[in-house]
Length: 270
Image: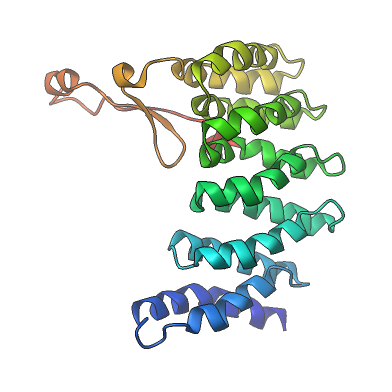
């Protein structure tokens, strides 16, 4: 019964945490018994079971309970199979979504070598606009996961494609994540490539795209500032914040906090 398998998936994370805390007594139980179940249910015929297994996998990754070898040898191959060009549409959409969500929890080398090539392919998926939409909405997170060199070499060309996509929702998602993408690039790329691209979005024929671009204008401009002097930094939740100077803090010690948070694309991704 699918409901039984779904309930089982919901119990996997707390069981895994218990086994981790009792590792001397159960040194291999999780890797031998529980992890194979999670991986198998990623391809279950029932979508609720698959959803439960995806959520369980993310919790396990967040808690750092999955070994690097299992990620590379068991999890990633399944996701690559599910996101292949000839994969079922529903499975492909789910796979690209889980790839984007888990990217920030994996090592940079694993993301770059195992998942980034497939992500770049999915950005150009001509069959399903939903796949491209997920890629566009999470583009900033992927850039942050792989760093500047891979972003400029592999991801920026794909970002240009998505920013000129025929579906306006794609262009809107790109406008919303523009600050996060810009933050990962060098000042030269920011000036010579991203600035003209942003102007095209702010002049888009669709008013929803223009509105999203105007909302991202301030955060995008802020990426040109020198972080050491401006006090700008990116929080873990993807928002750009300004850390007030010590002088400001002392002069406003009786006032509410001056911390200003500017929403980034990943926080507002559609």
